[in-house]
Length: 188
Image (cartoon, rainbow, N blue to C red):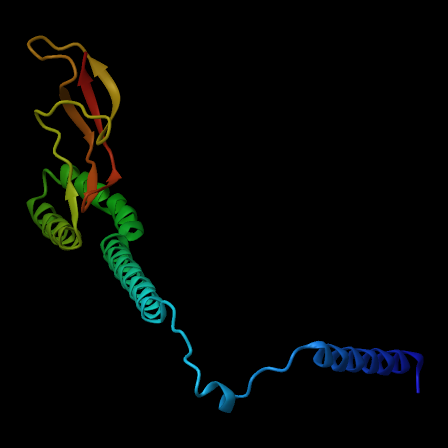
């Protein structure tokens, strides 16, 4: 036998002897038969039970409210993810939309090319619109730095300062989120 095993056995024997000694020192408890005739006072028994029941009910109500809040949060997150899942692809398609607008401007002389490009452009804008993409209106509007990017400024007679004079590049929204601000010329 190794030294560690001997030490373990000695410790177990000592603890067993200590338990026996403690049991001998304790006064003997009355057996259940001896206490049958005596009344056991139930001090606050019902009150303690009611308090425990109230506490358990309170915990249940808190847990139910917490679960309800969790569900509400996850539902809101799911809705947000569904609304903005197409944001990246919509941003990429804005460059294609810009190129279609340039093609429409360049195809002034050839009506057959212009009408074909215009049909494709309208179809693309319809698809983007179905997914919540909309154009930011700038014509006749006041400059708003949340939606517009002023790249030029010019004094204009008869126009109040801060009014948009010209749109250089269209801006777009995805539902209520800005995809790209409008590039504009503003009056000073």
